[in-house]
Image (cartoon, rainbow, N blue to C red):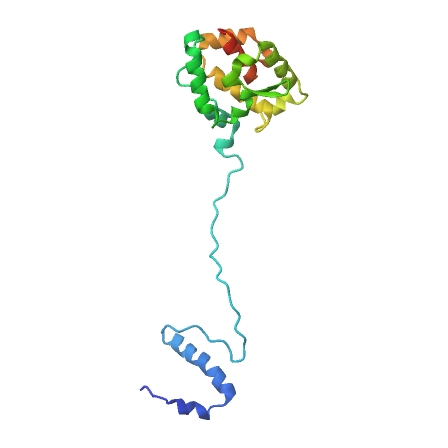
Length: 206
């Protein structure tokens, strides 16, 4: 049997019992399997604003060496070369340079396509005729004669690394016959210098 109680009923209950009444009601609701509202704070307890806390998100583990940052896999992508290989013929040089110019700005070896000679920065792709084979060789000797060159050539972000990747890109853009010819004309110690290989390629018919 349900009993209805008016508001005047609570006037006969002590303050202490009245404070406990909401909790007794909630316990009774829970025991009957009924949903209950949140427990109200005790009277006199100051309300404190609670900021919403986002639920913790599960972050998948990051591999220490993702494939894209693995040197071999990365270089295979960055140095894939032109789809149409250059055979060294004079008629195909300018079209080949145009193709290199189209893709160079998005590649890691982009910085290796510039040389500083006598205080002036020269864009090799646009102004290759301003750089002699000898001046390119001297810069290659200076770069590749560094004490830790064998380490830097495989260290991403270094000048040696970018120079080597530029050379790989060029070799992958040349026919096998022309690549072998250029390689035979360069000192083996500096044959992986991108700017030197590029100037040798251009000077072959220039």
